[in-house]
Length: 305
Image: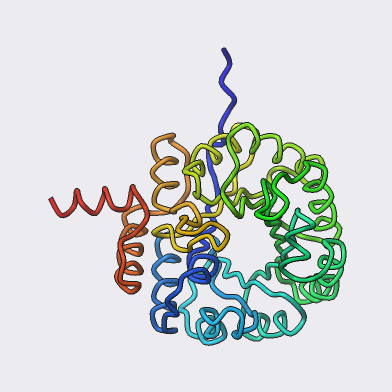
């Protein structure tokens, strides 16, 4: 039986400082966030999600985003990304020196209505001025599609609904599009079906898998996505970030676990696993809890002898 060819190299986008910390109860100081971003960039990530210019009323954890972007010592070759909901957010990201702005939409109509009180089409149309401004200023534009594999409100999300949002994001001029399993419900075959449907609208080399580990399926989903040609994945150091739609559930897949998988498969990432384990121990200590990363905890225990 012929095995599908896996990529020889993958890009890991580290989302802990933004997507991870955003879902943590504790709001950390700018000092801690700056150190976390710097540690991760030194570990070799070519893309770190460092900030979100959203209302501090709704997301207090991101209130120090401007300060964090202003203070980090930049690593050459690293893209520092910021999530922006509107032009006000874009202007703040631009002033802060973000290299990439991230716009977002949902594949689930019910999720879009419940989260931002408008339809998917309306939500993405709102980003047209942001997309134009990003291009004018030479910034990368990334689109993120939540609930692409399942929704906490409507359940199943049709494949064509995902394809439709991918096409809308493509038409905005996105350089990369993230397909996100926001509630972590996908399994391997479904992952492949969704990714292949998305690839009918946008080059698979520029699609990213963003998997949450709510049901313990994230690594299997990453492997399944690689089998169909996906080579960009998001992960969060120490497994930062819970899932707001599933009580007590873990959030993003832990970066250390993804790196351990890639190392075992002989797939190049350019990231130093030991340095990421250190960063995971650092941020877990700041949060006063143990890392959720199994590989990170196993490596740390082995070191301790």
